Amino acid sequence: MSIVIKDLHKSFGEKQILQGFALDVQDGETLAILGHSGSGKSVTLKHIVGLLEPDQGEVWVDGQAVTELKTEELYELRRRVGYVFQMAALFDSMSVAENVGLGLRRISGMTEDAIQSRVAECLDLVDLSGFQDRRPSELSGGQRKRVGLARAIATKPGYVLYDEPTTGLDPVTKAVIDGLITKMQKELGVTGVVVTHDMQSAYRVSDRIAMLYEGKTRFLGTPKEIQATRDPVVRAFIEGRPELLQEEATGAKEES
Ligand SMILES: Nc1ncnc2c1ncn2[C@@H]1O[C@H](COP(=O)(O)OP(=O)(O)OP(=O)(O)O)[C@@H](O)[C@H]1O
Ligand SMILES: [Mg+2]
Image (cartoon, rainbow, N blue to C red; front, top):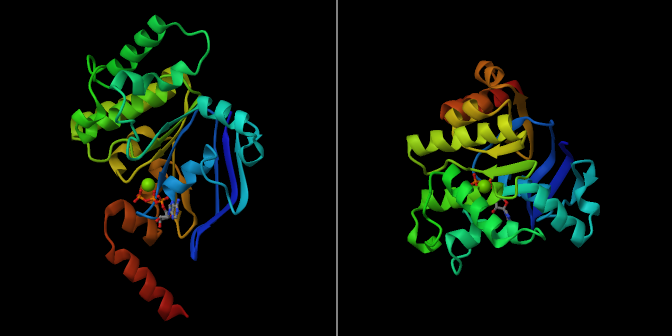
């Protein structure tokens, strides 16, 4: 069980977003993807579940080439890959319980009682017990995010893709979500990909961290290794010091 991305290229119009991005997520690990806003992190996750098609390159999940899958097989893949969307992507016309139960209803043979009890369990996990009958419009941003997370893990997927699961949450809720990501990995053996800007979360939850920069992998290593790197592009990002990028640009000019 693993996710392999090879030489991924993706453009939108004239804009080249991914330009040979590669990544190998190992079985059972949690890997964080860092990168500036607009660098293509969400685009990368969408390729993993076949929501976007590459211009060039390959995406493999569980030994299957995602681009080769037929519609039915793609749906089947998406049942095994939970996806926490960046903007929660809840259906406003449905209650919280209906949103969380969406994937469960597609599993044939599950009774209504079993669905309700799994929904309650998942809401419990994200600290939203008793929120079943609320509408998404009645929730705060952070609560919506947590409902999105509950929905992604409801079917007990072997893989979970988390797109900025802690952005906009308070420090305590952040720690709860980080704890949940770790629990998914340690107790359920989930292979996880976490897109985040939050370095504290990245260090807390991930075995390895990749940085996507100008369409390619700029860095790949453990949290310890990234903290020790001297690459100014990576340092600028993890320390929030854009001036380091300018130094790199000036340095490059002087050399040429
Ligand atoms: N469906 C699409 N059609 C056209 N352009 C798109 C589409 N999806 C993404 N893009 C563009 O691709 C680029 C990368 O988008 P992406 O959502 O992957 O960024 P990101 O790294 O997730 O950024 P953020 O941290 O802000 O979420 C952006 O310039 C975006 O406008
Ligand atoms: Mg994004």
